[in-house]
Length: 386
Image (cartoon, rainbow, N blue to C red; front, side):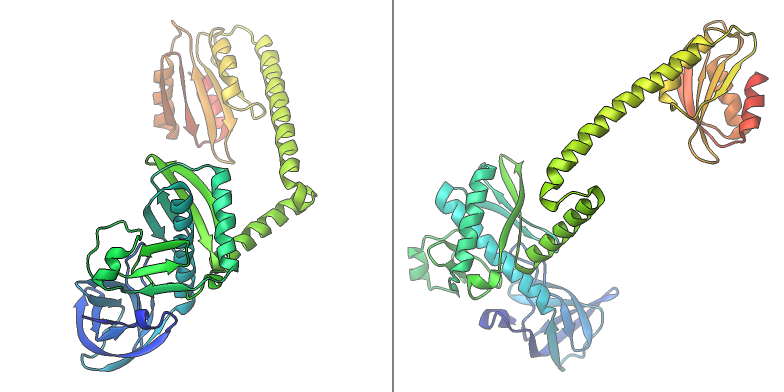
């Protein structure tokens, strides 16, 4: 059994321990100490990291009470080593995990829903509940949760004996009978939990519910707390300020201003489509019957708008109609179209283009399309000679 120092002092960031074993596992090492302040990967959160006797602790795992440190280097068995946690990261996890208890406890207390899933990652915290709440209910929960933060309530972590445990009405995802650690936040929540927590709710700083989605018959809530919530707010503020500067709008007017820009953009797109249709109609009106294949390079309206032109032109020639629209300096989008009874099918024409220019594309019937990298003059001459 490894002595778990994080239960004795939740803010312990450095410690000394003895190396009991060190085994090589590929390019990693598995190290067991007689005691540790590194919390392993469990309780819905990832493991602590840091330094141990000059090697990097990359992961920490627990099995049957024994905690294994996964490192990038070896340590001598029997040596006394000094461990240093990446404590800023640990403290942020404590903020988020304690915040989760408050939110889950309030939702259970007010709405009778159970937390059935919890994940504390490096960038996001998610809480899953077995029922549905809406935006108004979650806004109410967020307000109450932050009120609990302001009240700076003590967070008590303890291992009650079997008799006392049997008397407690606590939340738990599993049926537990021994070595049960209970985390209590005033009259807000009482829950079985193995993870380190802050000592008082004021240390959480802020609890922010970011978003929620319907998930497996319930809801999944995205949340951040403390330093992570502050960084998230800073990033959102920075982006809002950038949008404000780009649009010459006050930050408080950004939403309504962007809505107006989107409406205007939609109107202009509609006008552009109508203009392109008008250009194509004029081009179609100028088509003359020809025994030769028809080739046109058109960069104004785009390849999709030229399909009607290609069909109409193909009906006016014994060859094919080829439309090329520049995609980049060296590449064209193209359409090949032909009428029934033409001297060459679009499939045969495409095959020749693939052989000569390495064209890519496909289709069936009277029209095929694709892309080709070639000189425009060479493409023009190729089509005219089909």
